[in-house]
Length: 118
Image (cartoon, rainbow, N blue to C red):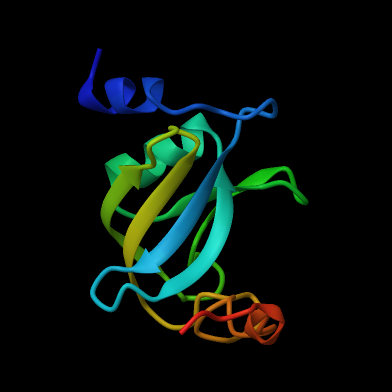
């Protein structure tokens, strides 16, 4: 068993064989996007150094940046305590969101609805 096989064996895949991947800029810790990966996409990500995902809508692999030029170079990957989410640290070249913005998390602020504690 390779190191990558050992790492993949620790992932808790959902019923569709996917794991959630939260993508973060490695140096600023800015959360850029969330995507899904199956075992082959995560293996490609860990071995190639380029972020690769599984598109649920298109039912195909997509390596971030191949068509847009907005590449994600992998700097690290961590599994959460439950084993069902990957935190992928990347060096984002260009924008991360398909809408053309730096992050997918700048569209809708829910904080006004939260009772903030001083």
